[in-house]
Length: 166
Image 1 (cartoon, one colour):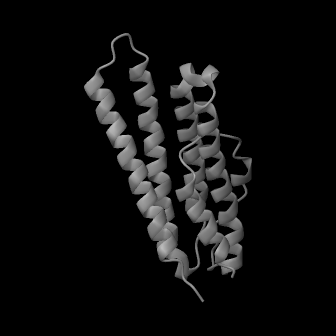
Image 2 (image 1 turned 45 degrees about the vertical axis):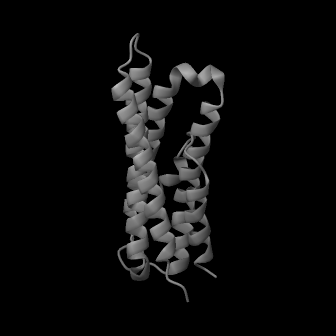
């Protein structure tokens, strides 16, 4: 039952499409554990990070649905990428219990794919704002963004699949 939250939080990231950004203050207090932490402590520490990641996604989507934000999508993407960098940094500071090492690594990969997608979204919107955007370049960026989201989803699915049960 203790592992149920990790399963649910990881699954939520698969179900929630890409989105936005809020303060990440809760990420600053995570400590590096010298000895292997127990499962409950791992769940508590990762819960905050998953929640912040969901906030980034939610904010991205809310801004996408706000017509007043359309001219600033490149800035929204840049802000989300910066927040993902903080999330990744916090995730890397956590030393998971041995049975969660592989899960932890897959989630880290998913986070990196998400951050790279935001970086490409920034490029995409900056290019799209030019007077005569290169349609081939826009198409290539769009394809790569969707490829990264697919890789993120695959990494999260694998992270869910390998959560130790028992």
